[in-house]
Amino acid sequence: ILFSDGRPGASLEDYDFEDAARRLRKQYGETEVTDKDVLSHALYPNVFIDWKNYEKVYGDVSNMPTFLFLQPMVEGEEVELETGFGKKYLVKMESLGELKEDGSRVVTFSLNGERCFFPITDLSAGGEGVKREKAGAPGTVGSPMPGVIVGLNVKEGEKVTEGQPLATLSAMKMETVVPATSSGVIKRILVNVGDQVDGDDLLVEIE
Image (cartoon, rainbow, N blue to C red; front, side, top):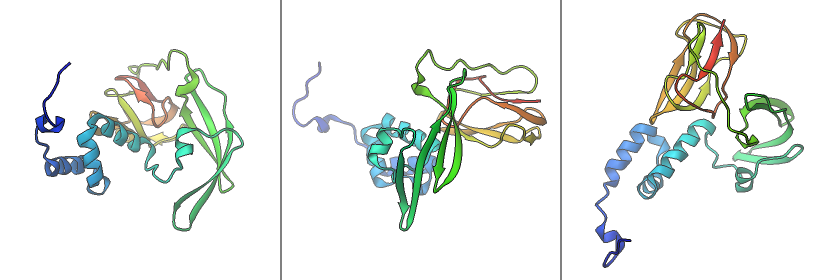
């Protein structure tokens, strides 16, 4: 155990807030980093980076009520969300689909009466985690490195051409576009937005 005489902060190295602000705004965007964010990064750098990665996947959740952020909705539950002046939405959790072998399920919501279907990977289902197929065979598209899927640009059954962007991967503080390795039709999509993947994990299969 180390002990310090005097004020603990007096022994810390100087922190250049202006330089930190420039670096963070260059990385995340001028409008995405406030002075409060710079202070948060100075105090808890790893927590701040984790949070920015979370925002890449799920967007701005600042208007979400705290109780809803901490406690997921259950089937039949309704909540009213306000995203701005005069912008209110009635959201109802309709159903939670059956858990598939790959750990995914389809969640059905209604937004102001209109049904929406979201495929997700259920991390709360327990077990040893999702064991993903590996790419390598013709027509397979794998992850170039470990990271988090933050965007999917295609759907099953869609025609694509070689080089067309299929997904976006957030890794090593950067976003990487994953292109189609060949032309054809999307046969399977094996990931959802928010999924953590390893290098060479199979993301999409083209036939």
